[in-house]
Every structure is written in structure tokens, then in C-alpha cells.
Amino acid sequence: AQTVTQSQPEMSVQEAETVTLSCTYDTSESNYYLFWYKQPPSRQMILVIRQEAYKQQNATENRFSVNFQKAAKSFSLKISDSQLGDTAMYFCAFIDSNFGNEKLTFGTGTRLTIIP
Amino acid sequence: EAQVTQNPRYLITVTGKKLTVTCSQNMNHEYMSWYRQDPGLGLRQIYYSMNVEVTDKGDVPEGYKVSRKEKRNFPLILESPSPNQTSLYFCASSFGVKNYGYTFGSGTRLTVV
View (cartoon, each protein chain N blue to C red):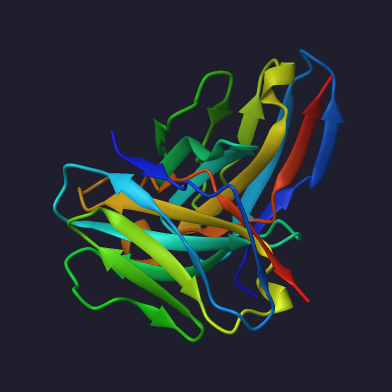
């Protein structure tokens, strides 16, 4: 079974700084997909970024980018120029490429606080 | 507006009293899923559905039932709720999770006393 580990339960950073959230996963599959979700205090789950394992290039969405290290099974999220609105829980998630599998497996989350 | 609608948003109930949390999506998604979120445990999948009349268990299905009689609706049923089912519940839907991830509802905070 696949597992997703987020080893930083909480982090805080000053506004405008850059912060990196860590995520590692365990799988025997060669192809899979990885996601980062954001959950602000409103508790809505918002998709931040998606990465396909067979793509070498790291995904980027505006101030959000990932560092995907397939051999190390690592998928970290970098937030540049952090803003107060980035304060949220962040969840890393994994799904393998097997047909019929629609189970997205989540990590335990990192609570990020942006300090004014 | 494209969305997943869950009701109720908050619910307090007593042990053993059957309840249903409704979920509806207006995006014509094939795939729907229920998750529960607990502190320190992240989100865990309860059940999922690949299409009408096709459902399967996730990681924590005990004590829950689902049905998918229509494409847009995927209710979660607790036949005899217990305090360990106190949690935040999310319904989610997708055209294909690998390519699009899930679109989530706004959550239902359930307390069983």
C-alpha cells in the first residue's frame, strides 16, 4: 500500500519569505501522480499543484512550485513571496496510474502560518 | 457555478440515531468519493464510486454506507453512529482523479454524543 509522509506538522514564516514544505511517499509503482492541496481556515480543499511522475520537469503554478525527486520519492512544495492568504493546512497526496484506481492517498498535513 | 454541495454543514447527533449526509455535484463527474478528516491523520477515504451503481470501499468503510443511484448524488449513510465517527467529512468528485484531482465540497462537521 502506498503511504504519504509529511514530517513537519507545523511551520511558520515571515510574510514575503520563501518556505518549503516536505513530502515523501512510498510506492513500488513506476508511474503515478502527486498533488498538493491547500485547506485554509474556511476548510475548503483547494488543489494547488499536480505533478506526473514520468515528467522530469517540476510543475509550477505562479508562486507555487515543486521539487520532485523521483529516486528519493520526495515531492516538496515551495511557496515564494509568501502572503497572509497562504496561511492554511497543506496536504500532499498520491495516486498510482493503475486503471480503475481512484483512491487519492493523503499525508497528515502541515499547518503553515504566515506571520505579518 | 460548478461545485460539490454537501449538507448539512454542521450536525450534532446522538449515538445510534441514523443519519444521512447528502452530496451532489453539477459537473457531470463520473467519480465521487467520501473522505473523513481527523487531526493528525489527514484525510482517509471511506468509499468511492466510479459511476452509477458502482461503489467500492476505501480505507475506513466500517460503519458507513453509500449509494449511487444517480450520477450527481452520492449520499453517505451512518446507520448507527458512534462517537468515534465524530469527524469532518468531505465529499469529492472528478472526471478522472489522476488528471484532475478531486473537487471537494465544503465539508460536514459531525459530532456524535
